[in-house]
Image (cartoon, rainbow, N blue to C red):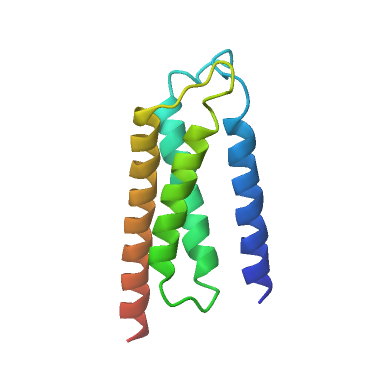
Length: 122
């Protein structure tokens, strides 16, 4: 039970951090950020998706993966849209693709982990 609330809190904190970073002015002045931007996007949404699925798995939700998919796609779109008015930031289709790639990879990893867990229980 405690893990459920710890994961929920961590997910909320991670989401807040994601949005705080999204509204900061361009971080290109930090060495390595511009060069690794797409890797950072991919990693950010890989971790977010893992946290989201792990958190949702503690709740009795019938369509957990559908809810996770809609949530992730919504967060991806919102995180890009809120950057439009921020100086030095732009809406980027390449960022959306990197975000979706990270998320899809996380879904695949969680799917494989679930298959392995189910087979080990038998």
